[in-house]
Image (cartoon, rainbow, N blue to C red; front, side, top):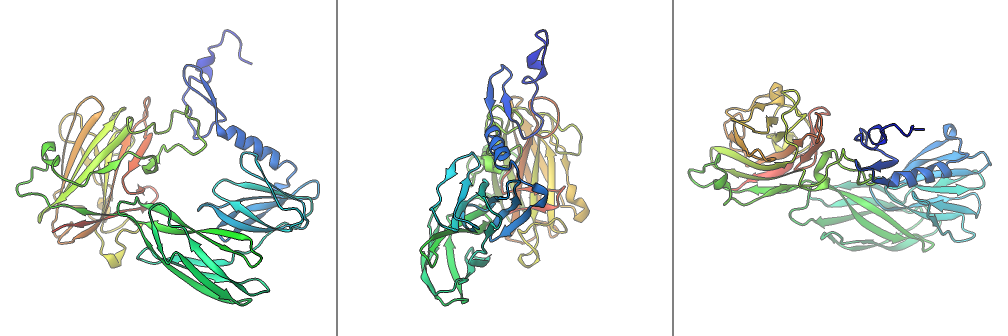
Length: 453
């Protein structure tokens, strides 16, 4: 215990958390907020009580992950989840008595006397208990799911039952998307397969990421069965033409240019994004646009590509080490490969460029090109001004020289801003406009830009 004379605030809740996990978090004034982690761990501890974890077997079936563990009382417990999103799992029990519990301890009703149970799983795990060994996850009737280049998808439906199976598959037109056709009929004899294909119309402006089209059908016994179909989206944009004599290094000239690309959403944060179960008091996470955000514009003419970025950085501070990104800085990525050479696909190498420059304070921002070993961009010019109140702007000119963009009309593009924590050094948050890009992991993800003639 702490003695009464000890400084309790300095000893515990006055010290910023260093990890992304806390059972109880507190503000500097002592206001304590129990995290949802507390409840989740309490449920986890209770649900796995008596489980012999070293004797468990892993589950990886039809998009469902997890494990099944024997228990000291002779029964079994399964832990299941679906990383992609909500889907149905078919669980076969050795007896009619089965118990299902959610991440936060809510029980799920199960029809009495059923040994084959549909369990709805998602990113949050569920716990399944039975008093006898033999818990089993049946293979999914949906296999070989894939996406084509035009955002359509296809999969194979397999009748693994002993009776004929006929019905229809329904696709939900959610989040403004349209799936065509929205419903498809099938009629399968035992052991037969059917290839299902559909096309997706994705709204303009959809952010880069992996999305799920919800599909549903009924099993031969009438049991509803749902599953997500993953669709990867690579955003596209058209770079407007710059007017004759465009003053790219003057912020006032950019006010008339369209195509404002905003960096101000939590799903754009790649370093310092709060997990779903984080307490609001945990200070190492991004606190919103007032802490770090930005707005970018692009323009081009026959000679150059121009990039402009306005940034709000409440904790603006130079990187601790330079070259480096552990502080206030901007990263720009260009993918200049041809379509048949990997354009807009993850990779670092020839044709993929990374440009980093310090947030400006006085004078022109210092520039660093980490990808220079794969080929240096020619004639890049950067300028910018810091206002001294946590705001700055930068502008970049990249000549469309033969070894740079050349006459290419399409290119991959990504831009990110880095901000330090309120105290100390290091990078607290990185907001990337189009997904993630990391030189350390040799992976990158690009939006696809087209230069308008």
